[in-house]
Length: 78
Picture 1 (cartoon, helix red, strand yellow):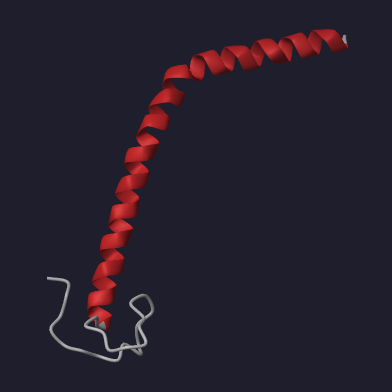
Picture 2: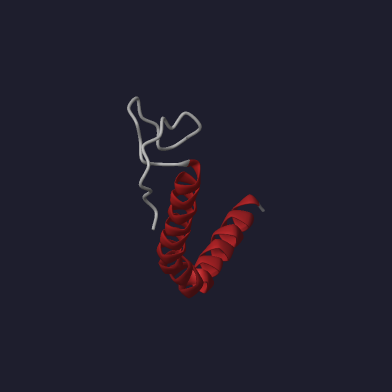
């Protein structure tokens, strides 16, 4: 359970700041931060997996086009 039963000033908190009393403690705040980091990492991994797939699927075409462009440029300089 992430929410506590006490009302604290929260003066030692960094994220759950409030001018009024708060039910958040340092320990609860740390748990929220760990959960948020995990959620963000999972989201980034899921989002980047489709990009990785597209790149790996098209890497041969990219390399071929890049090499062709380089060869054309190189021959125009000669």
